[in-house]
Structures are given as structure tokens and as C-alpha cells.
Length: 174
Image (cartoon, rainbow, N blue to C red; front, side, top):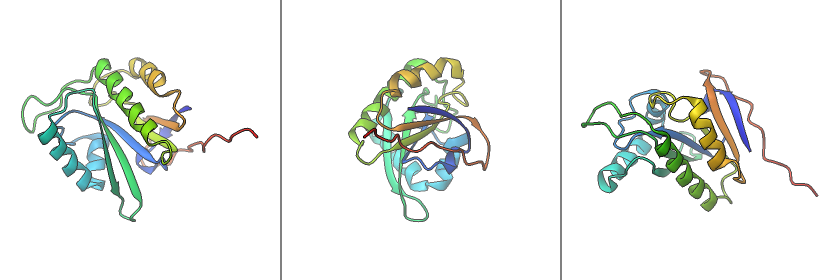
């Protein structure tokens, strides 16, 4: 089930966090910067993956690590934007085609991990630095992720320091 929430995604209790970036992104803005600061190993591993695999927009990359308290963390980088034109440059724009392909890859990743994933939290993908409008991205999120057996929390409005109320897992009928 998909839930649109207001709050700070970094305070989410979801078992997976996802965010949109570009191939070879430097994580200099917004959520990507906050994740880079909180998980420097994730950023280093992402840059290594980009240098060795040369991914194209539309891909998804899963990182597994631990937070400061030693709790397991999974972060998925969704390649929703064009790569920067040069090293250190600003990422290019996002395209709905890239978002759709990245969400499809995310769905495959989540289905492969269903025993350990109960929920995923993400921002309104590609609507910040990516430049897309949520009204064009929301239908892609619903199409690709609506049937998943996990809760999907989409943080459509950022409220710094505010923990959103995330619904718990669905109860099965006896």
C-alpha cells in the first residue's frame, strides 16, 4: 500500500530508504547530501560502483550498511537524472522514462528481499533537483509499486525534524 506523508524522511522507520540521483552524482544537494553526511561509506561505495560499472539513468543500486547505532541500513539510489556533463558538475534533468525504469528495478529489488523488507520510504522522486512535477511522477510510483507486499511511504512534503506517522504492516485476516 502506498501512503503519501509529510515529514522528514531521515526519521523514517522504514526498512529501506530510496532516493533519486544521477549516475556519477556528487550528492551535493538535498536528501542526497544528508545521506552522504550520515553514511559516508554509502557515498564512497556508490562512487566506486559508478566508476566501475558506468551505469545509465534508469538503474537502481542497493547499498547495505549500518547506522551509528549499529542497526542495519539499506539505501537504494534510483538513477532518475542524467549524469553531470563533467566531473564535479551539476546533474542533468530527470526524465519520467528514467524514473519509470528505476522504479521497475526497485520493484525487482524489493521482491527479491520480501522476507526482510516490510516498508520503504522515499521522497517525491525527481521533483527537487530533478525538476519534474509530482503530478507526472506519482502515477509512475503507483503503477510500479502499488502491488508490492510492503508498505510504501512517499514523503511528498518535507518538514525538517518532523517524524511522520507511518502506518504499520497490514494485518492478515484470520
